[in-house]
Image 1 (tube, rainbow over the protein chains, first blue to last red):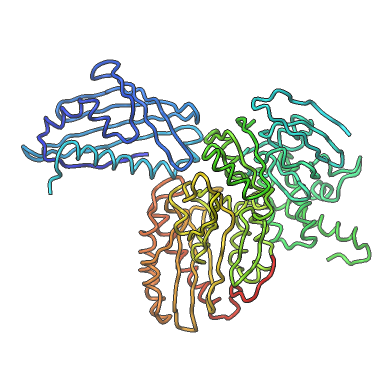
Image 2 (tube, rainbow over the protein chains, first blue to last red):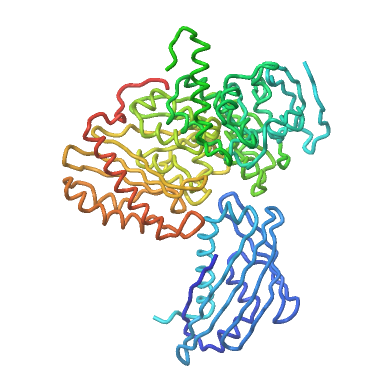
Length: 152
Length: 178
Length: 300
């Protein structure tokens, strides 16, 4: 399932790039993300992500790996984990591209590809598409709020 | 008056004592509340004619009749059969004499591999009890939840229509065939 | 085998709500189990206890009273399908019930359970919305009525508190000169698109149209913007507006692309089903034999 969006912030690109490496502040923008642990600086992290839809809860411990960090333009990461109860494998591929629209403004393009395997992936597909869109939208808003004002 | 393996010391400590009449035989069993009907039928009672196929109540291979009503044994809890009459495919024939529905299926090619057949026959029985002279449309509608991968359904529908006429004749031997 | 749970079997609403008050969301309400047990078997849901509500007599009634159908929560789809009262006075409901899932699910699955589980890909909620149905929710302090439209909150989410149980569904008879129609489409086990309409009309004059779309959005929903496009108009004008109404309904349906199809395809189907459902309901409404006007009372 692919979800993409973008936000524009009144912040220079380098500052946006630096923010992305401020792990506590960045993960605070990710809905449902708790307990981020650095395993290898700038490369490997461990995080737990939770979500709930009606009576269904998901708790996925994610192993996060940074695949590419081309400062201050492009960041690619992969996260993977399995919910213990539901036994569904969750894989996330994330690409963040920073476009310098002016000296003081940056457009951040967010592109994610989420795969959920197992029963949840098939039975819950419709719901997850909707939740995925909502979560990415929330992530984008949170980033925007954390980084500063929106360009009118 | 049979009993079967009792399961004591279940995880929650809760055990239900139920009586269920299966194909005319009374069984007193001790079961967990979370035992499914198909587990009771196949694993505890050894009646393996009822098939577990999709395991999500879609295909109908696990169809059994509970007080005459067709249910998916895979997605029903076993205790729901308490004090009830359960009919599985093993109960259709009387000794060596096949039920007219079974005969019709054989004569008219209503089965090939036979895996869906127990469910088909039981569903057909419930249908004909409710609607003794169904139209083809009524048969298709009722049987819609029983899936077959072999026959293409035409022969199954024919078998049921033939069975309907035969059952009507048995109940009313003087009547002309429709 | 399912994950172990403790079975509770209350025999009164009083007992049932006490259990809910005590155990809250750790106790799953269990009626037919066609949705619940399936999800538990898949390992997607787990409950420490299941509260079997099928032994509560007050939940089993089906009666026509004061021009409304009172459906006990544990009434099966099959019972609705075959009830003489429902077939006579709420014929569209009987027809909808007759096409829910398959006969085995209909024999066991209940209307109350279906509404509470709120699986988006379902039939009853969509049609009940154009009947302006409401639900009765009981807890220890008493019972409240809630419009069905407010009961659906999101996918698999309803406005049922952890200490409440749904006891009945109330379905008012449609007004005079009104007929309903429900059309659905799908190739998977569950429907992909469902459209319900209720049309109040005299020959060539359309007074009111109620429209609901289900399966497509996160919940079934009434499309009031589309309704006002088609109400209080003469028939030629309504027919000329149906395409635009269909397009509006399609976008208002809030479709997403998933295994049931692309968002564009579903939106398109909403428009198609709306046009067809309107014509069917209109013809029935002016035909006089609506089948849905109820006077008097009776037990079904």
